[in-house]
Length: 264
Image 1 (cartoon, one colour):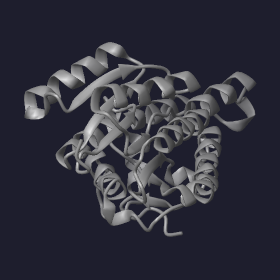
Image 2 (spheres, one colour):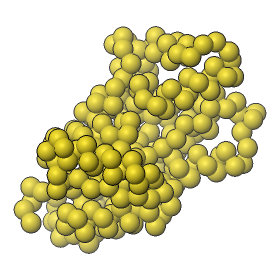
Image 3 (cartoon, one colour):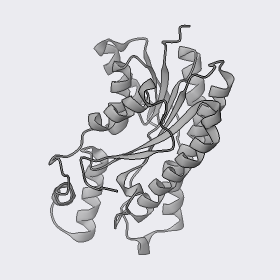
Image 4 (tube, one colour):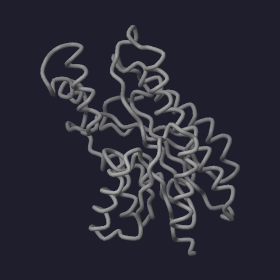
């Protein structure tokens, strides 16, 4: 196997931001494992990508990202199919729209298992595989999905914001612990991205506060300095840089890619 071969796992890589990341990493020359809960959706994504000329460079594997054993399964799929692992993208996540007074223990369990535990388990599984590989001083990458809500919390998104703050903390701690092993850990923090997740957020805000479909997407996107809603490709371009050798001296960071909503 040549050193040029690079292999990535992208959790939630079949749709939304995750699909944008999958597409970009393939363009960058990566071999990619799409890891997601919906087996059929994963297979469909692979079929579409095969038709675009990536046959033999992308596979899908089903599993629940909130479970530790699933991440071990995702890593095994990378090694079994492509021989190694270079980059692990903890992209899978959910939104939850509720006032804090209405949050239940079950709500908190769900969002922390999917958004936070998944990142911890993904980092553990990736680091374990990196240790098995004879890569010398080559830098390996762990890339986590936080959010602008992980820098400044949003009303109606209290639990979601807390989960994204937690991901920033895990990213910093892991960067400190893993740096001596030539593993970098960084996070990307998207803003308002035109995906199904924001359709869901807008819908729930209409239910809570009234108005019409699209009102809240329009309201919040009005704060974007660059004047347009973010696309998955905008996020993927930054993840592409994090997954490249150009970012080898960067670790422990959680950068906002939001078109200029928050300046902190």
